[in-house]
Image (cartoon, rainbow, N blue to C red; front, side, top):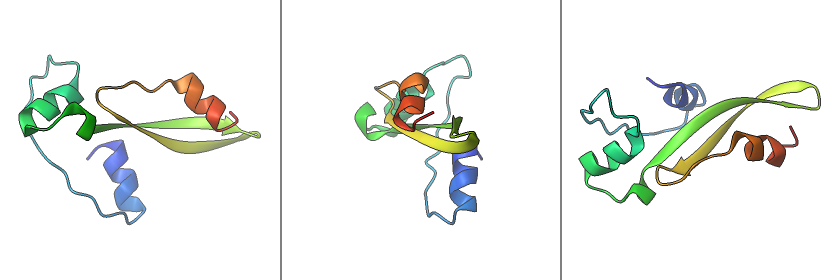
Length: 82
């Protein structure tokens, strides 16, 4: 399991994993997943778990974006007041 699926399971959130075989040398796993699953990249999402310090306490947050996009950690922290 990934950190994201572990967090979902711990929170009791229902989810479904779609498995596919990928080339370990491929750096863009999300794009490879979209191709392997035959779906548009905008319909496949990547997750990023991050620790952000807000008001002196560390909070774990999840950023979710389509594999065709990117997530700025600086913008994520700023959006949360970190």
